[in-house]
Every structure is written in C-alpha cells, then in structure tokens.
Length: 231
Image 1 (cartoon, rainbow, N blue to C red):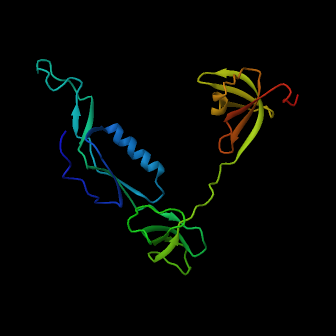
Image 2: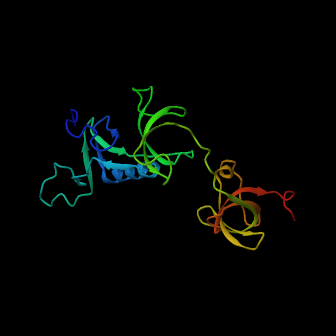
Image 3: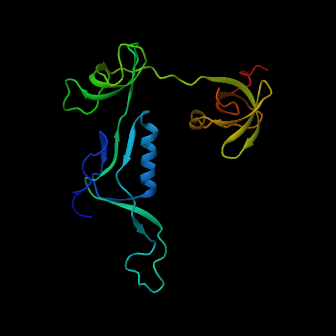
C-alpha cells in the first residue's frame, strides 16, 4: 500500500489518539486485543473509540486462484490501514482528588506553563473541571479549578503466609499442599523459585502465600530445609 491516509486522520471524538505510522493489514483479533488492553489500563470514566473496522475478507487461497473450485470461505477479516490513520481514540479520563475540598474526580483541561506538552507529571499545576463532587461542600460539579498532580502510595493486597507440606504433584507445575491447619489448597511455584532452579517434590515443607480473597490456592515462595522446619 502506497500513500498516506487522507480520511480518518484527525481526532474527532476523544482527546488522545493512536495513529498508524506505517501501512498494514490489522486483523479483527488484533483490533480487539488493542481495545482490551486500553480498557484494562484506562481509568474509570474514560471512553474509548475504535476508528477502524475489519471489512476486508481474506481467504487461504490467493487472489490469482482460478475459479474452478472456488476460493473457499473467508479465513479472517482485516482492516486496511494506511499511514496516518487514526486507530483508537481516548477521552474523558478522570483524576482522583486526595483532599477534603469536596471534589472527588477531575478531568484535566490543560497544563499551566506547558503549552507544548500533552501529558502532566508529578508536581505540575493543571486546570481541571470537577466531574464528581460531595454534596453540601464549597466546590460543586462542573466548576473549573486548579490542581497539583501528585501520587499516592499503591495499596498492596494483604496476603498471609502459611507453612505446609507438599502431598501431591499436579500437572502444569501445580502442587497439592496440606497446611498446618489441615486445609488442602492448590499451590503454584513462584518465579523466584523457578529462576533459582529449586526443585519441589512431594514431602517437602514449603511456605505458601495465600490471598485473603481466595483461600483455595496460593503461591509457593520458599522451600524449607530440614533445619528450618518446626518439627
């Protein structure tokens, strides 16, 4: 494919966009994978627009095949994308507010003192509009305010560490572990143990990390030696 895209090369719906830098055929599976990745990493309240559609069928047999027995049914569908075509658009992402002013969520309008930058960093002052506010507070919804970009420490998931005994080896690197309280759970080997080439066998005493949200399985993080065991 030669030339650049003269249609669909401008942002129409959102504030940010993903633009193609080279021509390609993008399959429907690739389009859906990109949409899922953007949805998974976007903040709550953000909107995503898919600007391309797979409308070209592709068969196993090439176009030069004679039509004696037919070309067969389409194998998959692709979107023909030229250089400069907008693939995805995103807009409406909200920021969480970490003070007691009454505002809960903000949407950034622009960055003060950085007209040539499209992204804000920690410590930057921005102009934003309130998208969600607490009732009966000085600040109300749709007001334009100034805010400072900050970062909050990430809350780690609370987990418990138990000692247990490997009772059975299961397929795909899984083990059946009997904990000290006689509960049976499924354990899988952590990446640190795999990188260290530590072998886990039935009868070994191990330490297993269990999430408070799912007590039926856990991650084996340490293999106890005989002198480390409580017995």
